[in-house]
Length: 424
Image (cartoon, rainbow, N blue to C red; front, side, top):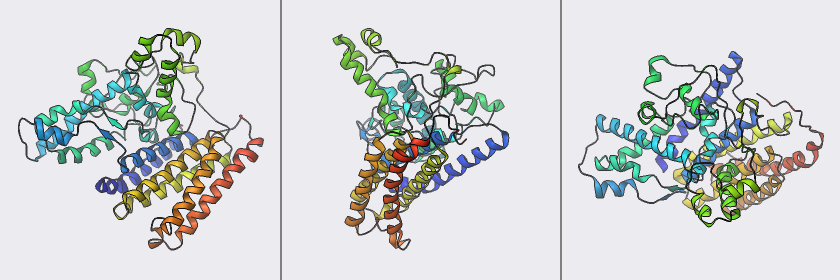
């Protein structure tokens, strides 16, 4: 895990630079690809996934190490060919896990966060799930295990395969000639993120597009039908924690409400979006039928609130980065406490972005956690060894965050109308 933390100290700045570059180019081209609150929500979601990974919050039913030790037919030594085979094998597994997430009702909850943005940009690539804490797709790695590919090779190639899926989340790159027939391009992935009927549940591939062509799920982007992004049932929140569990909460309610005992069971494994007939009639849900006339989710956001939300994000990223560079020097319990504080902070300011009153309660919890950790640790997890008196600055931030949230929720909001203009 320490190696992964070190890798993130390089990749996170790289992602941020690319997101800023995309924004600059989009302004230069006159193409609006970013909405302020949406971008903050996306990056915040990426932080929550990073914290989940760093704290080891995952349940592995059968580990890859175990499979290699018990079912490998041959033993392969590390070589360039082995790394290539591993990359292709991971991509094959990625295609099918991605497809299962889209087509099975319960499993869609593992992936909805990634599609929840109604924009399509590099920031939305960071919307990764924290709800998929149980590793259920171990069987897709059996081919790699049978070949005896070492677990160390898979551990090295897997993050490379994941990070390689970042770049094609953009509207600024058009079709790429011959590469359209080999790899996943921005055009292919725009189709995948669209809710247009022509594009729905297409282009599951992660790196090599030939999987979709082989298994009949390929769809080319049509110039006359521009993609509309998001999900059919709008999530209507900037809070990544709510988005992560919004779908399974809906399934739970439907399973409870239906009078058919068989429907209570099968709803979990039916195609995504399936609902019992009696529940559909009693509790209708608004589903997008014409994506071209749907209004995007927006909240009452003054310029001041948007600037404060950006400030919160910048501080959170800075605190995360300190966690990454100090990871090897912290005990596991300290890492857990640090993660709990950041999680609470993200929940608080994204709830404030929603203008949800729960943000005040979350800020109160954050205030008390922050003060408690500072007292218990004798400072902010050793940060004063790097930057003198940094703990005082963090204490001031925690207190101000609570006070400013009260201002936005109870004072400033009275003067904000819904006819605001978001920063783009």
